[in-house]
Length: 174
Image (cartoon, rainbow, N blue to C red):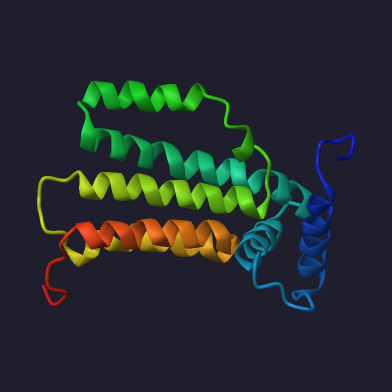
């Protein structure tokens, strides 16, 4: 562990992101972290955003934008409105250190958590069976987790599949 608190992996990720930002490609092509590298490289094309800044902020920004509304939606589906609001506010003050450091694993964990939150909201609805449109957000977030880091993505996809086994689905033609 280095004095700044990271292992060697972080330096490899930053080097790969800088090469992708400069040349548009990386050889050999890493399939494991392509989603994370793509988001960082895309963010680095914005005016005033460097690869280093994009790398540091991508996970905290995506987690801040994605998780509170999904947590509120999930809590609303299982509790009263007031309890859901208080619960979401409480979640916002809990320090989630793993989500403060931008790594492919952290971003995949954000998407995996988003998958679970969307599944909670969907399976808690009073209407049954599920309509096929209910699967779009959990499947998308599970796929995003898989593209960023396959191990977290496999777990997120398994959560969607397990939920599908217990929740009936309406006819896809509807």
